[in-house]
Length: 237
Image (cartoon, rainbow, N blue to C red; front, side, top):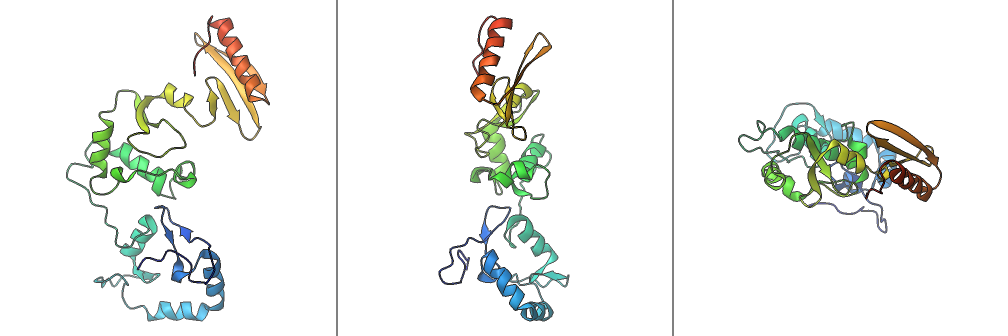
C-alpha cells in the first residue's frame, strides 16, 4: 500500500521528494519524524539489517548485498525511479535512432540528480509529460517532434514549463539564447549576482556595450534607442 502521509497524528509534513517527482515516507514517517525515530531506535535499525536474509521485493531471491531491505538491482531501481519494481522497457530500434541521445539527455536533466544540469531542470521542478515516458515514450516523442532540422536542438518555448508537445520545439542557437530565463528582452540580460541588467547590441558583427542598469526599463530603453540609432527601427522581442 502506498503511503501518502506521515503516520504521526496531526503531522502535515510532506515526505522526501524523489528524483522521479514522487513523495516517499521512510518507515511511514516524514523526514523530520524519521530522523527523530532513527536517533532513538538505532538498535532496531541495526537488528533489521542483521535479520534481512533476502530482498524484500516479492519473488526476488538475490544473494547480493542488501540496502534498505533491497538487493543491489532493486535498490538501484528505487534510487533512480522511486520504485523498486520499475523496469525501463525499450522497443526495438530505439537506441539506434538519431534522436535517442536527445531524448536521453532530456530525461537525465529532469530525472537524474547526479546529472550536472539537474539543478536547472528537475531540481527546479521541470518535468516530462506522461506521454513521453514509459515503454512508448520515446516513439511518442519523435512522433510529436518530427525530424530535427539541421543546426537545431530541443527547446522549451516557456523556460518555466515542462517538456511536452505543446511547449517544445526545434530551435537554433540564436532563438534559444533569446529564450533564456535571464534574457528579459532581446539584448538585455539580467545578472542575479550583481542585481543589474546589461544592455548591448550587435550590428554587422560589431558588439556595442550600452551599459549596466539597476532598472529594467532603463536597460530596455537604452537597447531600443540603440536599435533606432544603428538599425533605423525597433526590433520586436
